Length: 74
Image (cartoon, rainbow, N blue to C red):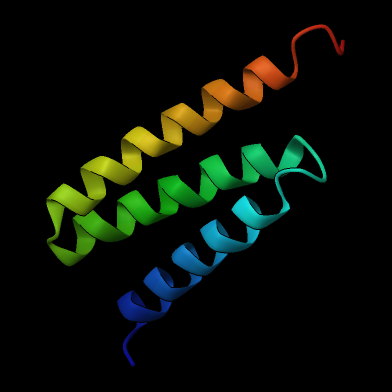
């Protein structure tokens, strides 16, 4: 297994774990957004630009959800 494949495995595993734990803390939503960004980077590096593009969009959607979850908590 090469470094790029390991990076991709880490990214999608982090996405799965963070998504599963979102109900426990809003910080897992932010972590999910970061994991989606890593997944997007992996997609582009691997040459699967549609995957990279969709994961990038998911990253922004999750970031917006995190910001909405933080409204009124400051």
